[in-house]
Length: 140
Image 1 (cartoon, rainbow, N blue to C red):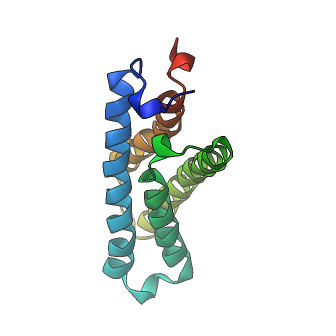
Image 2 (cartoon, rainbow, N blue to C red):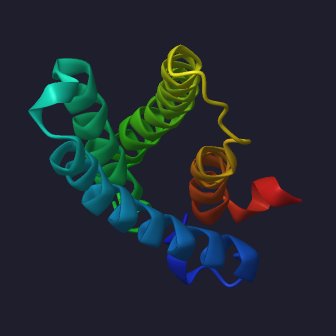
């Protein structure tokens, strides 16, 4: 099998999705530490753990999956990406739930979590894009 990035039948939408994934990974790599610094040490270890996980996910999204030659290396990296993306959904849902509970204690109401929902959508778009970049024939 030839390298998927040079494969002539890779859908341009898949290529753009992976480019967006790289930018999303860069955003996560910068956003994770920034949220920890913005909140400070008062948030405790769960917040630091969440921030560290977001940085790891960002690094995973920036990996050049299409350039992995060995199938075993690609499979393990792809499996790790899938697990990280699913875990990110749980982390964001739990984070939103805690934000709503904290707001309820202050007798405030939060709006719809649109930012978190958008991040979840963009993150869950990446594993299929990685798969279709490697195996464009699966898209048929």
